Length: 482
Image (cartoon, rainbow, N blue to C red; front, side, top):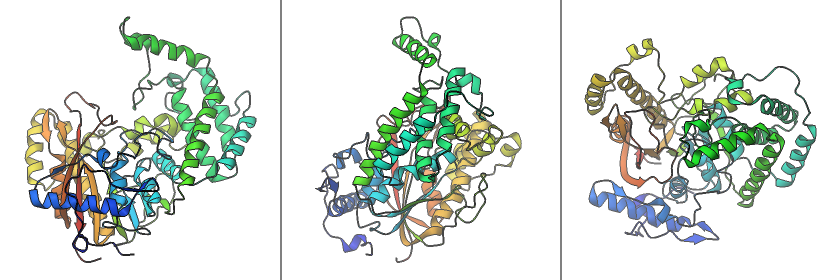
């Protein structure tokens, strides 16, 4: 079934706050078609960004424990309402079409594309993110998972064998007794023969690793928890002290079992949807969606020219969340990244903050006039942060060109982005990305603004940065007829 163009549709709803209708508990294509067309008309009439509350449009969509979204925590997840809205209509794509997320993270877009009957392709530089996304979108039977879990629990040995795992600062992040228990549990999981089942429990193991570590559970990037960090009368002082005391006598087996049983219930929810789409992680670098070798030696798959109908993605921001660092404990325990390779993985992340002086010196202008003017002002205050932002825009240009290459003529890109401050100066990331997209051959059809509530992004990442409180959703179309 071919997606209908804007002009082939005629029903328009002007009030974007009116909820979309549902069919059997799921949002109907007709309802979201009407909603989207109404927003497009409003944007065309106003000629400026339209304020949208995606939570209000899709009120029955639970933002919390939906399907397998909470299988594993991951920093700065995309609000599920956004991909659901842009996937559950017949304007941008139809069931059976190919949807791509070149910055898929832990797979929010992939999961929603699959549930909507689309075939999803994912790309991410973080090997833990790729593992979570693969497991999150893989439909497994609860009865089989429960049997496998029972087998893992019976195979756990009393004492570890072999060398300790290659985990960064192992003794700093884990009490010795906890580390020994984790090593025994990890061995029991690796003995599983079924690779799909094994991956599911590796994800559960990763959740367990963070829960029993000495890292502050309130922060995404590991910071060792110390009760003394808080004043004596502070409510978090006693809570932290109690948590640390509990870790000294924790039974890792029990924590893992609780995580696994909960995740099995989530997996059963996904199976019950009868999701018909197929998801696949195909590449590790949004800047090169053709053949390349990834760091783990696995050959990536190429995404062919003009093969994707819809891209829905939320790229990282300049000075982005430290994704590799936030996952460093799990990367080590799962054997996904040796400690010696952590820097190499960080260097593959767009929006990263770590550069060598040689890399700084090689950074050129962005070819976006307003961005270069802004960067010149930032450079006078902080040459380092100016270089970080310039590198971000240059790398995003390469990624957006790749998105244009793989999109079908008439295909669409939904780009979620936000502005922030760099070195105390305003940095109009959204405007710069819009310019780059247009320079790459994409046409802007609409721009929406949604407020962020309780997002992992609402965190200052350096002293001169700002809290991100609004996200822009840009809708582009590739020229030509589909």
